[in-house]
Length: 347
Ligand code: MG
Ligand code: ZN
Image (tube, rainbow, N blue to C red):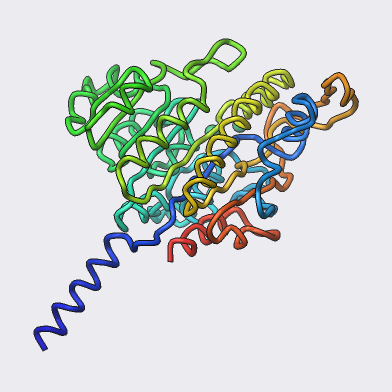
């Protein structure tokens, strides 16, 4: 009997720590990256994209609980936690229940975790993976929740929400398990189990304005770091500013942001191919700008775009998947199913 109890205890421990074959999951979100943003990026880039190497393609219905046209908070929450909620809300469902995110579930199962964004790290999309707040604009509350979270590596802008606060707290000092670095090489050389890299005090500038470091280099260093820790990991990488190009109705910005995201996808795929046990999902939270491609030239790599709104649209967005269980992501489904399928792929 005692043996049986011990055996069950050991088995349950094994459940909590990860199974030998537990896959890495890398979720890549191009904010505002609908099919026309992708098309523009392809046509303006020698008619090619890293997305062509994916194994399965699906379509995601992005609408929010209360609106046909979603925002990034509701759709981030849908993908992170599997529930439709109201626009503006992060990590809380329509009945006010706090939600656990896929990142948190992975951590419970012994995974490491990483969050990377080309916006601030407290912006709606990355926040959906660690925060629970009624309004996405509660940046200081979101920062506080990150400071109390278990995310192992985070890279993005928004330092001021941690050290220039209304409550006069300096969260950077309070986060004493973290090493805060100022370069990618420091990440690779760090022996700290928790690392933060604030790329900018506030929101980072656009790629066209010279944002550094490049997202593909950030991804490379982060993957090296995660790989060196010898545990499975969950990583979310956001190309945040494709959306901002859409809001500005600025096609050049959309294309330059997409290009950087696309070369990041290439590096992530190379990693996944070499690793053999990494599920990669590339999708968007919604389309931005109601972009139509109304002309241009393949030969000259020129695309003419017409925007129909300064906001988001309700168009379905594509989902590209590669690696173990990638076949789950084919078909047409709700954005909440992306959470369900990631969860399923853990078992
Ligand atoms: Mg975003
Ligand atoms: Zn937006």
